[in-house]
Amino acid sequence: MPEEQGNQENQEKKWFQALKLEAGRAFLDLHFIEQELSKEKTNTAEIKQKVAELRGHIEELLAQSKENTQEMFENMQRILATAKEQIVALRAEIDKLAAPPQSYGYIIRIHEDNTVDIFVNKESRKKVKVSGKIDVKNLKIGQRALLNENYVILEIDKEWEKTGEEAKVVALLDEDVARVITHLDEIHDVILAEPLRGQKIREGDSLLISGNLAFTKLPKSRDIEELALTEVPNVSYEQIGGLGAQIEEIKDAVESPFIYAEIFARYKRTAPKGALFFGPPGCGKTLVAKAVARSLSDRLAQQYNKNIKGYFISIKGPEILNKYVGESERKIREIFGKAREKSEENCPVIIFIDEADSILRTRGMGISSDVEITIVPQFLAELDGMEELKNVIVILASNRQDLIDPAVLRPGRIDVKIRIDRPDKKGANEIFGIYTTSDLPIHAKYLDPKHKQFNEKYERFNGDVGLVIKEHIIPEVVRRLWATEEEPYIYRGLDNVEIKADNRIMLVQTESDKFTLYLKDLVSGAMIKSIVDRGKQVAIKREIAGGEGGLMVRDFCVGVEIEMKQNEELPNTRDDAQRWLEIQGRRERVLRADPFERRKKEKTRSIQVIPTTGHYL
Image (cartoon, rainbow, N blue to C red; front, side, top):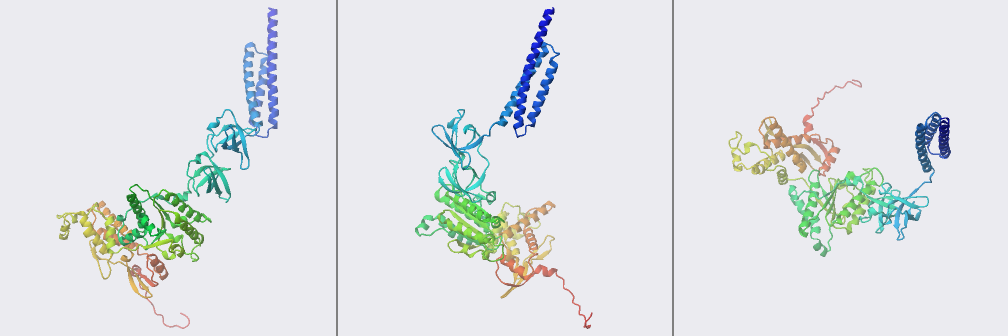
């Protein structure tokens, strides 16, 4: 027994010595790790904390091992082994911190000997080897590669470069090389990365570049996209009333050179570059421009017996203006660039610029911020550059054509000038017919002979809604709208009281004449649509209130009254009236303007005569 007890004590001593030896090695490893951490300038606080915790844990194990049995010793040995694994992990972290930095490069060429050329930066081009783990056949131009300190490719980034700077294409030097200009006006030659190869790159396109590579074709500027490049609008000439003569003139001057291009070519007659639609506001200039685009597209499709898709670029003049120098000019370049791009599809493209006088104003007038000094030349440069293009025409619209620069309107540029004037009675009938159709509800007194308000003159309609609208309601409303002192119109209002229409707007005295401005002198397609909408609203309110539904003449006459009230707040001074009348399409020089409605509201002032009282009152 004493001998066995001595052997056990000797065995425990050996275990303890082995444990101390393992712990000593662990302490030594921790010491080396602490020395290496002291050399690192990066943030190593977290690793130092782990080392301190591990050291304290090992010291605690050594203190407990003197009193433990063989079983406890084996448990501590396993814990110490775990600690050693943690030390190995800490050393790996230290190795990462101490490792030299790795760099990235972009692949620009792949050689047959399985080496590749890379750009490390703009000035540094290197021929490097590829790790055996990477299949060279799968490499593509523009991919980002991770390099070690010996410039061997270790990894390939799966994603393409997404950051860089925007640059515009100046010229294509080769199928895979483009010359670009940055926002700092620096010119670079860049290699097109794989995603760009196969795409159609044009001058003026925006590319995302990084270093000497271009990766992505950027969309056009958002402000230009918002200028509404759309397919041709679904508007036909049949939807336009009162402009029959102007439409025929447009067909001859604008459409014919595109439809009969061969005949025009024989006579060496080129198509016009542009047209100006001018006239009072609300008379259909924009609508006509849309109809031109639709008609041109449809007629070309019919001629060539295939579907031809046209485009309509609609721009409001003020949308182009920008407070930053050069931005307005850039927008004009991009608009024409977009038109050139679409015209290559062999389809008609119309650039419609509304309120053209806001950007193409006569230079040097001194009544604006003089932005036109640079905008007008840019527009003219783009317009003159259109000689080589086909299927593109510029249409300007303005109600102040006298303000547009003469260089824009000269022959050879905006060749066609068409006045879109106010409708006459016949034209007003046509416009009313467009907005009041036979599918609208009509008051029963026109259709039902048993109705208490049925009139014998309605018998000829024989219950036909279309006839009631065309031959009775519309002519009566036009008479109400055209009422003057010489041609009065009397009707019953909502309270069933007879009303004599008073359409006088303003008494105007010019240098050569004195005349009364009536509502008929301000009639436009937009006003007629407004009157129809107001008349419908009157009928709707009556039906909601429990009255009889359906439209009748009185509803539209009330609509005219409401429209008259909208025109009460008119300019009441000579200068204001002069400008207002010019916008309305009249050019007389005003000496005096006296709105009738204002004169009715004014009260005469009594004049008190004070007798002479000397120098003091």
